Each structure stands twice: as structure tokens, then as C-alpha cells.
Length: 217
Length: 162
Image (cartoon, rainbow over all chains, first blue to last red; front, side):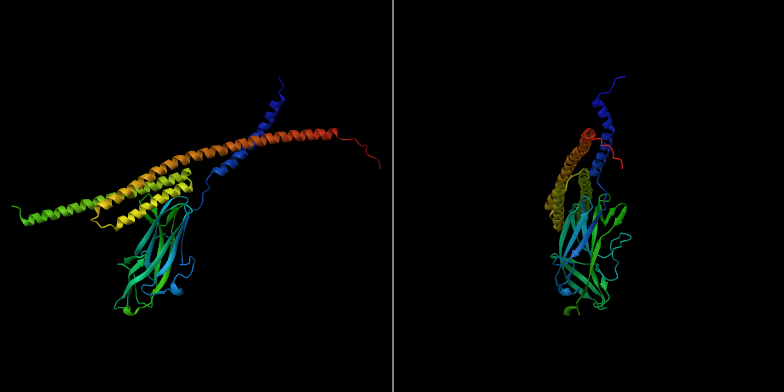
């Protein structure tokens, strides 16, 4: 029987060690290349004129006069890991109208005033300055209050089906912001977004009341 | 001789038909734009899955955001401004097609880049394992030599009896 050379013997003895190390190194390589599944979500926020979560209304009073300008800063951060086509819908609600339903992921039935659309990439923050004022409201002979028009970013919106309130001193109105995303299957916007087979929604609301002006008393 | 009432009915029918054809074409055009938009979004998302970096995707998003601006302009037009409307529609379609083409190119490039990166990482693993084996081998040799050296340096000292 031929005797093996010292080099061959060394290689033979090192082979299992090399294979073991190769296995360990490739595991490390694999873990660096795989993409880890992460939760997909949006962050929707609204800040005051100074960019802080406060002083939303002039003089810290949510009782508004006609023509009083209110400045907010809307923001949306995407953690969806992909490009999304989003829309922030602005609605006007009162005390009785339903807000969006988190459990059923349904939007509010409150009438739509306007919407802001944007294509947003992952980890992007989309800031939307939101300046608005009430330009007209009426009080009926029965005492019902209806907001007829609003100005948002220098554009006036006439509201046809705006909610009414039983009386100016007993009613709170609210501006509702809802996040909608483009659904590529239905080719339309849907309330919220889908993640891991579940639907999620993001929405905000800010309450206000009206100060009776002389002409509306 | 044609009667006035017949002429009126004919004219009205013609206008109604024209309006119907126009509204149908606008609706079908908007539906096809929506389908095209979904396709573009899917293609950009596919490019991201292939490994497109954030700069590449952001550039596409900037181009897509111009569509929203054009669409808003389109909404402000009166129904009589047909020429301007057609021009803006064309601009939207051109932008969508351009973004789609770019997304597909980015997907191909990103896919190749990802494959190269994977190949490099897995090769680095093999090279690392080889270097570690050689280091282990020479470490063992050094250890053996040290032990032999220590053996030859040993002194036999008889133990003293208490």
C-alpha cells in the first residue's frame, strides 16, 4: 500500500474543518443578503403653525370666527418598503356623524371637502401646509347651523351636503383627515392600506366650534 | 323642403350623440390611464424588489408627482378647451410611459447588481473559510513546534525525598 504524502494527509485532515467553516461563513453570508420582513405602516400627523403638537388654533381657542385663518402642517411618513400613491382626504364632520371605523377599516361618511395626492417612497416624509378658514355659514329659522363654504390654501370650496348642527352653542364641528392609498388591483383609491392580509387605516380629527357673528345671529 | 321642427330634432340628436361619444371617450381614456398608472406603480415596486436603491426610486416618484400637477391643471380646464386638454392628456401618457420604461430598465440593472452582490458575498464566505482553514493549519503547526520545543527544553529533576 502506498503511503500518503504529508501534504495530502494535511489536506485530508483539514477538509472537514474547511467544510465546517464554509458552512458557518455561508450562513453569515445568507443572513446578510436576505431581506427581513418588517411591518408596513404609515404615520399620519398634524402639527400647529410652529411645527409643534400644540397651538392649533389662534389664541388657543377652538371657537372660530368667519374669516379667521388657521394654519396647520400635515405630515405623512411611509414605512411601506415600496412606492405608494397616497391621498389625504379632508372631510367636514359634526358631533353625530360617524368617524372612521378602525375595527372595520372603513372611512367616515362625512362629506369630502378636498384631497391631496402624492407619490411617496419608503422612509419619505411628505409635508403638506394646510391653511384654512370658514368663509360662510348660515343659521336656519329652526336654529340649525350649516357651514356653506371653506377656503383651503386660497381655494374656496362650496359644501353642498355639509352636516348641520342643532344650534351654534351646542355643536362641535371637526375636520377629519383620512389616509387613502391606491389599490393596483381595483385601479382606485381605498381607505387605509393592506399589510399581512389585514386592512389598516390612519386618520386624525380636530374639533372646533363657531363663534356667532353679528350677521348670523 | 325641410321643416324647421325636423331640422331642430336632427340638430338636437346630433348634439346629444356628440356629447355621448365625447363622454364615452373621456371615460374610457380615464379608465385606461388608471390601468396604466397601476401598471407603472407595479413596475416601480418590482424594481424596488429587484434591489433598486432609494435615489433611483425617488427620481421616478418625482416624475410621477408631475402627473398629479398636470392632472390638477386638467381639472381646472373648461370643457371647451379641448386642444389644451388633449395636450395635457398626451403629456400624462408620455410621462407614464417614460417612467414605466425607466422602471423596467432600473429593475434589470438592479437585478444584475443584486446578483453580483450576492455572488460577491457568497464568494467572500468561501474565501473567508479558506483563509480561516489556512490560519488554523499554521496555528496547529506552530502549536506542535512549540510543544516539541518545550519537550526538548524540559529538564528531569529528581524529586527530593522529604
